[in-house]
Length: 521
Image (cartoon, rainbow, N blue to C red; front, side):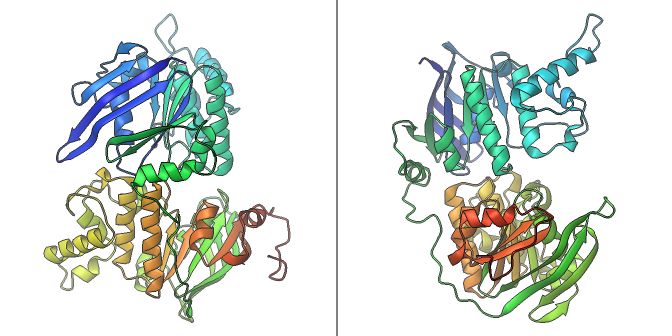
């Protein structure tokens, strides 16, 4: 098959940083081409160069698209040639309808010059059908889940007569069902002659969907692997070796478990929805975690995992909350975030960009933000001590940035996650709840996050991990609780747990009786 895209010796520099250092990429017409690399390797930067987000003249090298030299001055220029990029952060307007979002910037006008709404809604319905959406085109986007919003982005791309579709971490925020539907859609589009480039850290999905995979490390092309000839089993190890520059003998660092006394116990915890009167989000949930122990919470999207964690952490979610919290055997009150912190409980949110970090501030500010009282014994923050603390965490957690005055919003996802962990580690928690700690980060950064968790429990701390990735929970936890429809449906020691058994417990219906401890395993 012919080549649709060649990127030759692409170099892109930012002040003090060479993000791309002679990257080469060729994409065959009609294929699904994956790009893999650690956070900060240059994957998204390369695609922004291709799509005109970084216009011609701001980089060195040559782009040849469909046999012609391409010098895109803007994203509009690339879209006119059929190149459409869907960023990891979806660019939809939540209060506009599905149809309005699909044709935003590409409005369908009638003879009078006004928008022809019948045409808009009819065309939107046709495009929605192509991507498998059966919602009403006038439905506001904010009433739909992330999986359906991702499909709306693809429908929007189809409205622009896309020929080369670029997807940046398209399944990062999706559950397994939505992810599989998206991959099936990419196969379907491939059958229609549409070429796709997919950036992803999910190597099992890459192995499943990609025809070829290009590995990038430190802004340079390492190799391009033909997935059809690579053979099964060893291809993921080969990709990892190319990404991190070394073999990872184990995906999860080894840990000798030394479990101590109970640190936190939650009993009969019930939480009602903050706005929907009478709707229980969490119902009579009970669990505990001990010193030196990593406890996992597994559940499908909507099971209530985040709601459970946030309601425990200073009642930052929900209303009419009832139940009891025990810390070191004594009942406590954690009615506010400040009270939870005072009891040495910390919560690292799954949404680091909205709730976990201030993206326009620097590393120093973010690291100290939850523990300012330690830096201000007389009411004034000691700036020198604040910098010293931030430098200490930058070093110990291997945060890759020029210095602690670097803006957090410019860091890679993995390094942002390390800043979130630094912020909460500085509060000296006895219990750390981490919600999706490795979402959207690469295997090398994941390994470093697991190592940080291991160091915490080795120091006698207790860690609760909420994750959508069952292999992750089985790889780092001592015990796993399952959650379905707001109920704790099971508890399994990792030695007795399998993905299949966890999934059985995660999919119990509301009216099914809960298994007893005797038959849960």
